Image (cartoon, rainbow, N blue to C red; front, side, top):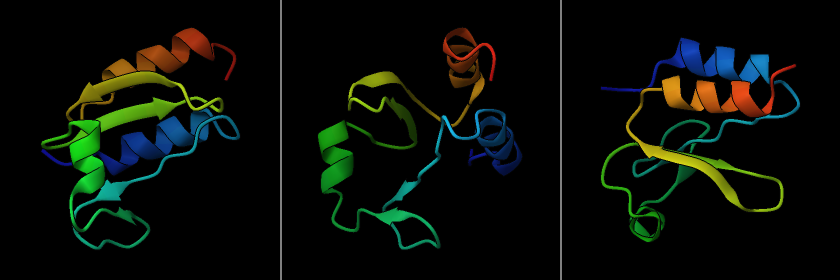
Length: 83
């Protein structure tokens, strides 16, 4: 299952100025960071799709596998309730 572009856009716009969405891809894709040799995926322990929320201090505040954004949306609502 792929990423839901509409839900990504809503998540990003609902937290505008606080959250930026970036994509890391194995294959070259417009607007994506490329991991053509798989080193970043290997270091992150990602086999398929995954989500990481990195805080400004570099700490990973949230991570999960897959493309379902429900958990991330709940996490953001908990920590950014006014956004």
